[in-house]
Amino acid sequence: MENNNNNNNQLAPHEAAELHEIISGGVLGYKKLQAAMPMVKDAELKTFIEESISGIKVELDEMQNLMNTLQG
Image 1: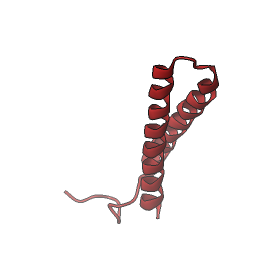
Image 2 (image 1 turned 120 degrees about the vertical axis):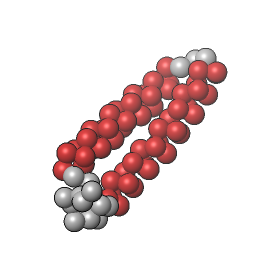
Image 3 (image 1 turned 90 degrees about the vertical axis):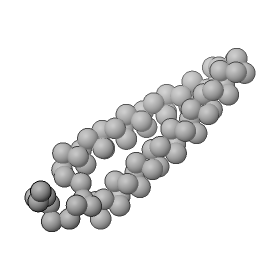
Image 4 (image 1 turned 180 degrees about the vertical axis):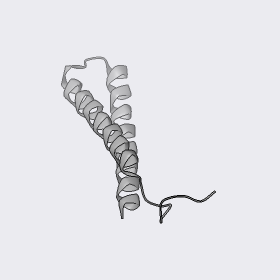
């Protein structure tokens, strides 16, 4: 089946908008977790949040790199 895009490695406008929305939501969650850290007293919860923050950062970086690569 033939694709309407000349380059299969580019995002369609609606795909770019959706990916941008996902990244924005992830950044918001990342910032909220960082803001909550000073209030957390439980060591186990603090470790969990720190690991979550690290994982979110990696995922956000990967999505941003993908978006940059596909947009040229």
